[in-house]
Image (cartoon, rainbow, N blue to C red; front, side, top):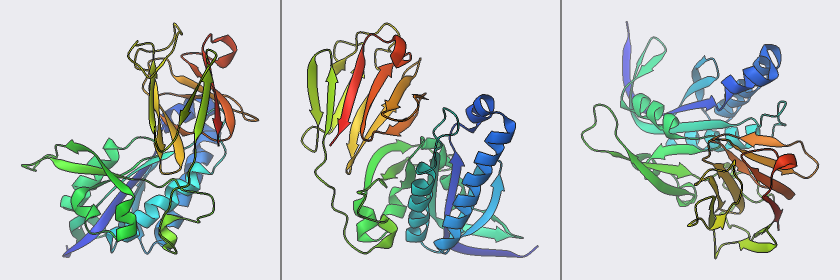
Length: 295
């Protein structure tokens, strides 16, 4: 069997919450939605000079000549999937991990450090995230590198030292096509998120970018809801978007005006327009409901 050693960027992307999707939407609808996502990921891979090595159910493995190519594909995948309409009550989303390094190709299969680390990194990612390693970030172009942030260290089997994991932030203003276009430097807009609850109003902006919510008295926003968790979740500003993250036992219920209510369970959601957030139960039966306005 012929073997060829080289260096390349290896990317894994999988659909978050596909098991729940099959349970809630049924096999036929869920299968069609998963297949559509996989096809989108394949298209974005090929457009970014990559090649899909294999697909396993709801996961895609792809290979690229450069770290920037993998980053571009990851951004395009996230943008395409995030724009899809919900399937029933489930908002579709993917998680992506990629790494550049040594690979060994044998009869169309790839092995090596970059494969193992990319697989580990996609396991670290949550819905809507793109995760890579510090050494890969150092190989990326200045604009892409500027849109990364260190988030954690991870232990990888066979590695003596922990690996520094970075998140590539892909949300952006509507007047830009994608980070991958490389037509201009990224400049976040001056956006704000206004929250109204319990007769009070809070504002998140560049000056105050994060807010922790829950029943714990130390939370930035204390929720007086028996179904809420002590550390229920958070809202954080990433570039010019506000991302709601659920950490709770009973879920976070989000309604964007004009859309159906959706449930987040250990997932993320990009807030938009005007809507409401309920904790642990549907807004119809909740006592504490946060009304939000993206401005």
